[in-house]
Length: 131
Image (cartoon, rainbow, N blue to C red; front, side, top):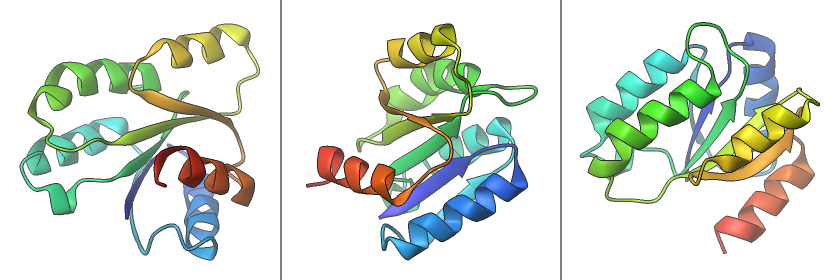
């Protein structure tokens, strides 16, 4: 399974790598600290399913392009060309109800996870989306 992490926090990305590897979810993890770079990667590889992630962990609050902006562009420019399903899990430290509701309103968001990412989250994602 290919996993993509999009989070502007380098330390969070490091921790997510460890949690993903320790739980055997994936050995191939692609991470981006800027959502623009992730969108560019997805656009460039949209025809190559082997390079696309099966699962994206997406932070909500990021500078320049936040998680919702990413989802808007993903839905408009990437989804119409995709030939495989990608599970998207929003990650956030936000406790604001508005942020949670906004994230859950996107039809391509499969899970909303309060940071930090844990083994329990990984197990739930696998159970709900990859069995």
